Amino acid sequence: MLFAHGFGCDQEMWRHVAPHFEDRYRVILFDYVGSGRSKRRFRRSKYQNLSGYVDDLVEICTTLDLRDIIFVGHSVSAMIGLLAVQQIADRFTKTILISPSPCYLNVGEYLGGFERKEIDQLLDSLESNYQGWSDQMASLLMYDAAHPELTQELSQSFCRMDPTVAYTFATATFLADHRSILPGHAIPTLILQNKQDRIAAEVVGEYTSEQIPGSQLVYLDNIGHCPHLSSPQLTIDAIENFL
Image (tube, rainbow, N blue to C red):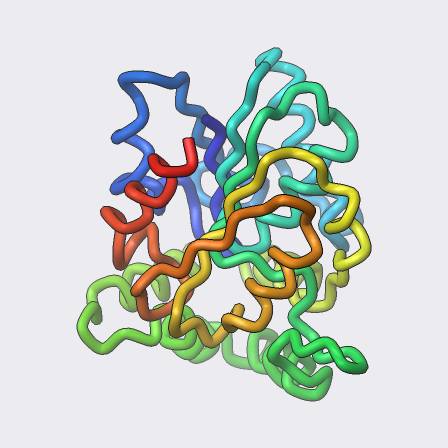
């Protein structure tokens, strides 16, 4: 099982979920370049869009010669995972997408949740006041007053990132549009959708499920964008039922 964290996070975010599967699977955790304890030099030119992160994920799979991969991707990593599958599909057996969004922008009749002006304001705020942006984004992601410690953890995780790295990754995340790859994804897929998610609303999860042939959509009774942190047992149970 290969677990891929979302924007602004690191592999520690899987600490409540990944250990549950270690008795049956080889569990692989990693940090994207610029996140967590990654030691590789961040090159802005490589990571201007998601292709740089996709290349790194493919490299992990091929270098470790991973086979029969069950991929678990949170948030933007859901699309990074699907893009990696396009390159090395024979190495994957299942994909599990937690809080995915193929496009965060409202485009025509598609409702991704944000107008372009809102994304531009978000990115401007990141550049001008990174600490304030980190607090605001953490609150937006968790959206759960019952877990202030998790909101604080996310904010601290954002603050550990270099602002240049954060701006580049955020731009690549929030301006991406990968709706076109969904219909061609032929690997059995589980989509975990939160009932209250201000980043990837229910309509986004439903669209993603409708576009990926044969995918399963499971609603979690979870508030916020990070069920593996705020509702780990619900997340584990849903994954177990799929496996």
